[in-house]
Image (cartoon, rainbow, N blue to C red; front, side, top):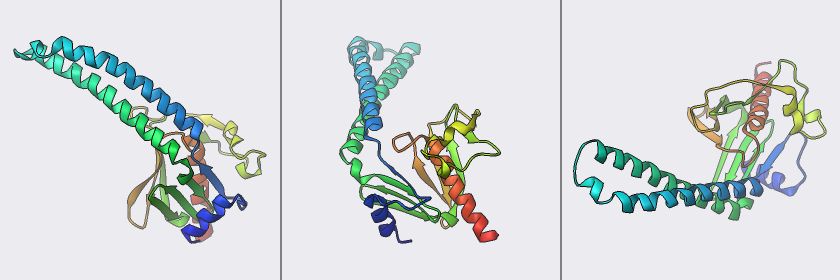
Length: 214
């Protein structure tokens, strides 16, 4: 299906059965912006006095004091400025929330962002991978079809909790077999919880593979 037709159908409100559409959740992104803004303010409260207290005295010599001061200022500066940039990005997403959309159908994966649309046919979706989740959800061996549930997002109550590597930033991605390039689906819960996105994507990709091979 053409990507323009997929997006038009998703935005029409007349969503076909087995399609799942996720708009950007403004409330989630706004809370993220406020949280990162608070971290940024706290970072600047520490960073600015630290500059006045250490510059230039701590940089006139050499040795351990110089190294420690440099590392300290870099950490505080990165925290303050980095958090501020993330907060600005989240605010930008809130202002343009209508332009964000993720659509998963039995045949297509489509993600719309300002000035960018990613479209991958489901037959080319492979190696769906979720990273950085401390307690992500895995489906049980026998899981009720989520599309038969009254609320298709409540299916996660039928899954178990397992551990995965916690050292990375959260992300959900897959391999586009047409180009052998990684496609990032999401790096936070601004559309939906990452385990929910993962389950739907894996389900569609698996079913598409089965229909082609069976």
